[in-house]
Length: 370
Ligand SMILES: Cc1cc2nc3c(=O)[nH]c(=O)nc-3n(C[C@H](O)[C@H](O)[C@H](O)COP(=O)(O)O)c2cc1C
Image (tube, rainbow, N blue to C red; front, side, top):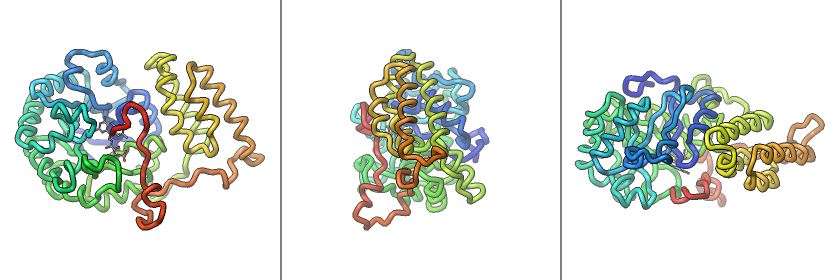
């Protein structure tokens, strides 16, 4: 697929996940293949212009992290314009505008989902950004404020006219938060509203089949995956392969998972320093462990690591402890293997556990309001 002037290597995108989609995660996921494009966590335009160290860390990139987009939020047109220019100067391939963020502090200043209710003002802000830079500007939105205000098709149409290069749409409303299922028909109505720019569908894609379902049922051009990449950083490679061949690649082995988690961890230490890197990685390791099989003691140790040595000791201890659940060849016995991921659209919505099993967990921590 194309996005603005770029021909992409696949139609798969990594969704911004504040607190997670930092440079270490982007490099780790890209290395596994299949991912065409990644976006930074959202960055406050004003903080970036003020060269706030946290904001600068959020936009840090590397040659292996290409193409990448910086996601901005803010509601002051001159700030959004100047921040877009700064992103271009920093070497970003694109700037994405956050229009779908339900966090209170973002909505309060008129950014995020509040933008979806003021079309004219938003179009003017976006036009100002587009006029100021050569790189494409994209927008990420939810379906609307609530079920009575499904404004995404109207907003998308206005933004297409204003000149944005693509629309990312998470198929939920702001009022919905992360509950319920993604509204596939809602995404389809955004696709139908546009004439020439691609729509990238987003929400609840945790398997290659779910990505194909999103493409087939909505007519969107690309799929963006967020939480699914926590569960399975290989999802892009497996989905790309599935979309091309119809064949499902095997899930990675335990050893591969540990190897990739190690590289991810090492990048945290390099990027944030060992102490702080360890602290931040405490919330990443449990996502890897979800696919390890039994791993409770490992998760408990991981949430207390303060050094590379702690990290390695926890892995070594886990490998020893895990042997009791394995056969002589070191392979986890089937009864202890984690249940295969099932795409939410394949579940029976009337089953007793449907709501529970449909819900992809939203990580805890400072970003739990997402
Ligand atoms: C922890 C967390 C942080 C998020 N941070 C952002 C963000 O910075 N910008 C944004 O546009 N969306 C953000 N989102 C929303 C995701 O990009 C995505 O739209 C949403 O999670 C649905 O996709 P998924 O089901 O594939 O995760 C975040 C979601 C989560 C769970």
